[in-house]
Length: 296
Ligand code: C2E
Ligand code: MG
Ligand code: MG
Ligand code: MG
Image (cartoon, rainbow, N blue to C red; front, side, top):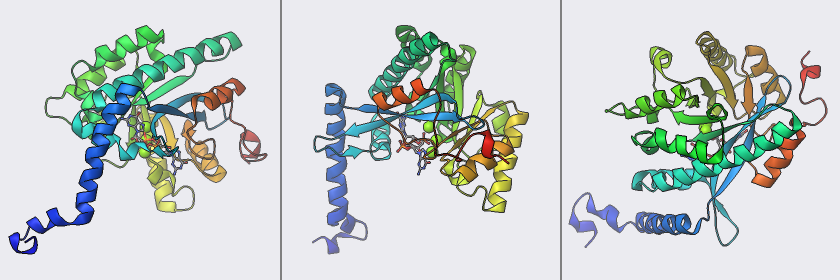
């Protein structure tokens, strides 16, 4: 019987765990099918200059739409795809779709006589450790016709730690080729500041967990101010994640952060909507919510 079989075996009979296992097995084969059928979708969230609301770029965020109209968020399938290695073909599709889209957008920008937008693409540990990764990025850029300067690769601190050092070597190759590298979710990992000094990154994304406390929590705000100061002294660009209020925008801009991303500006949106927003050039906020005019 389940109970008598030893201290650790009862869990195998836990109906909840069994349901979880069944669900992840279904997800795994579902991922294969979705890859084959091309049913993933990229959403885009604008990354905005904090001072004037101009759009600097977009972050591509993957979604898995379901036949019933619901959408599975990335947190619910990226870790699985990462564990099974399915992230490699999925990541390749994401990279190709995002660079292709950015190249299209920049044709429009060029015609409008405005600065090109950058596209930020999240890459997972598995992709970064693949020795073929820089070549794959290079091919995606060539095929899309996108200048490397307009691609940002977003990597988390933890994804950079591998024994062989391939991830770091890959990022160095990418930065040398002109591709930008962002350190994502900064502050949530364990890397020391001296580590930051040696990393081949040019942008730091301050995690939402830190931005949440700005400007109301003095200690958290002081920490963010310090992070921005260090980033600036290392000549890194600073992007604040999860900017939800105009108070946050103002405080972050005053502390020297360059760009912001968050619900204050826009949620991640489908490509058509992002295109419209991009053509408008900047993100319009309700009167008095943005722009230098309400800084005083
Ligand atoms: P991330 O790279 O840190 O992306 C930012 C996440 O914060 C996104 O969630 C975005 O929708 C959310 N966000 C942005 N502004 C706000 C805000 O003001 N308030 C709140 N509450 N949330 C905000 P999303 O799209 O669910 O993605 C979650 C994570 O999944 C990403 O975190 C990233 O780690 C991963 N991910 C998403 N797309 C991809 C992808 O294409 N490839 C890989 N490898 N990972 C991805
Ligand atoms: Mg990201
Ligand atoms: Mg992030
Ligand atoms: Mg995050």
